[in-house]
Amino acid sequence: TVCTVSSDGTVRAWNIQEGKQIWSSPQQGFPLVGIITFPAFNLAATSDTEGTIKLWHGTTGEQLSTVSVSSIPSCMVAYTIKNNPFLMVSSTLCELMAVLKDTFFRLPNTYKTGHFKVASLAVAVVAA
Image (cartoon, rainbow, N blue to C red; front, top):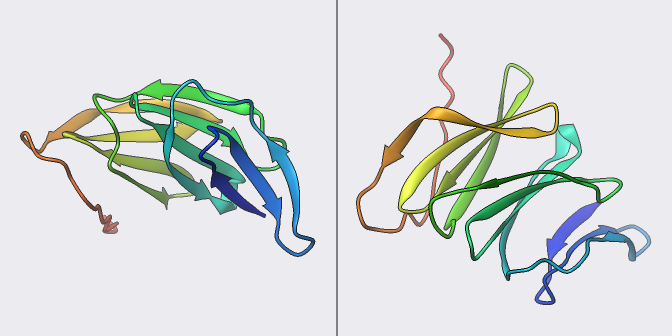
């Protein structure tokens, strides 16, 4: 399965072996600018031009959760720590969110980057 965001404002999942669409979301209120997946958890996260991050079920297309960030996200990084999915979102602030039981939780530390846009993120997980 491959998930995409489309210029018509929808999120879509595709069966790439058969070349068929599995599901399509309703058209979103604002243009979608990014998507990232958590394959091990069958989840996808999308971002739009208003700073809204949405979590989708990869098989059914059900919208599971929504959270707003400070500005338009420039990039997202998905990673796993101890079998829990996490999402790092960058904009003018780097905001760290956990995805637990299909719901976003904003973690307490926000890393201010000043008045410039973060173009890319990398995550290094160090064992304690």
